[in-house]
Length: 252
Ligand code: PEP
Image (tube, rainbow, N blue to C red; front, side, top):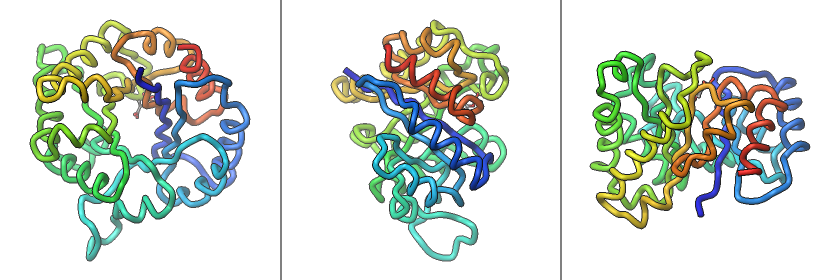
């Protein structure tokens, strides 16, 4: 049985005061139940104070980005070992905003994935197609390219300590959510692609859905057999919205 992971990607939002209120709302409202886990990914400058506030809670900490390099003259970058040092357990790699706005190719994403794992972090590998790609029938081709870049460089065994997030680009921040069936089709495809290399491992990999997930649509998405949680943007910025998704996870 795969655990459900509900992960909040705060993106470039927050402040010391707003984060403290958000974390205290989340921590005090974690629903009863087992089989699910909550994770927050604040902006880099707030990782240390959020880590401190999470101490003793069962909410995990992650980062939104990491350098593919280990250390050295890379001004403005953050090494995976530093994120680990600050208490991160997870790091998002290959988010579509980074691929589209910061020129991150699948090769760079694969290098970040490996750098994260080398430091003991669990990468959350984001894959997903644009609307034009979906409409031209190339969704699976796009997903394959993004996934294979990591499979070929890191190997299938690396997915034993990684998470995948299927995030259709057209659903991110747009209010347009994939239907549970649309999402499940892609999740099933991803798992089948991993299974070609190692069926047992593929059956254990968590595959999250991301794209305008909220309290109202979470239960339907999470009820699908290959959807193991959510990567949440907008709805992770308000404790009650995030907890509504956590409650759906706790009931699943
Ligand atoms: C995201 O950025 O990963 C995301 C899914 O955002 P939103 O929930 O706002 O669509």
